[in-house]
Amino acid sequence: MALPRVNVKEILRILADLYPDAKCALDHTSAFELLVATILSAQCTDTRVNQITPRLFAKYPSAEALAAAEVRKLESVIGECGLFRMKAKHLIGTAQRLLAVHQGQVPSTREELMALPGVGRKTANVVLSNAFGVAAIAVDTHVQRVSNRLGLAMSDDVSETERQLMARVPEALWSAAHHWLIHHGRQVCHARSPKCDECPLAPHCRYVKERTKAVRQRA
Image (cartoon, rainbow, N blue to C red; front, top):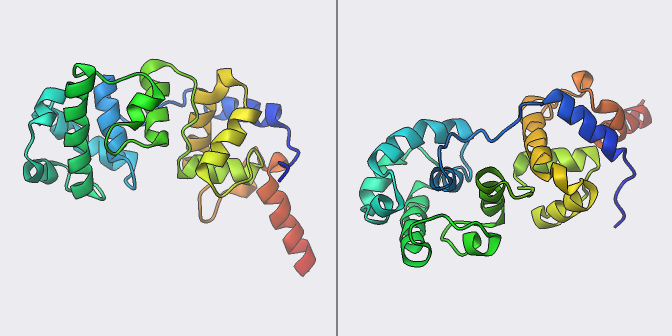
């Protein structure tokens, strides 16, 4: 299926103007902390994760400490996070693999990251982009929704959305565009009741055009 014809350059310019300081919302001071926080962020808000990680890292500040954690005790620390039982097992398994395979360090390749328990492509891309400066587009729910509404992508599959965005967005802007789309999804382009009337991207938005057309047809 051919992608809609949209002014990609102008859309990216507007997003850059709207969110010049956009960055990763997960608090972290190292690649290890970012990896752990990103694993926790699945089906959990970044705000909630940021409330959990200070006490988590106070108790388990390193891969060595986390690898030796007891599952039940770790569960009690991250219990406010969705899917906390599964995540506790993944965190311990990831820490143990970091020690066994990577000398306790977070690897800097997608393949090695995705071999860690609980780490999929999105999590790997977040770590690559924010911890190692590797150009990447991590497709979360916001990126998926906003990019498809704008017409930058057209797919229900996150892997295909990532591929389409990589083809349309200049590689030098992949990481920045990822953050711009997330911020726009959180602040304006909500899943329900998006603020289309006040959105600077409305003139370029496929979703707005289709909604306007539907309203006119019903009139």
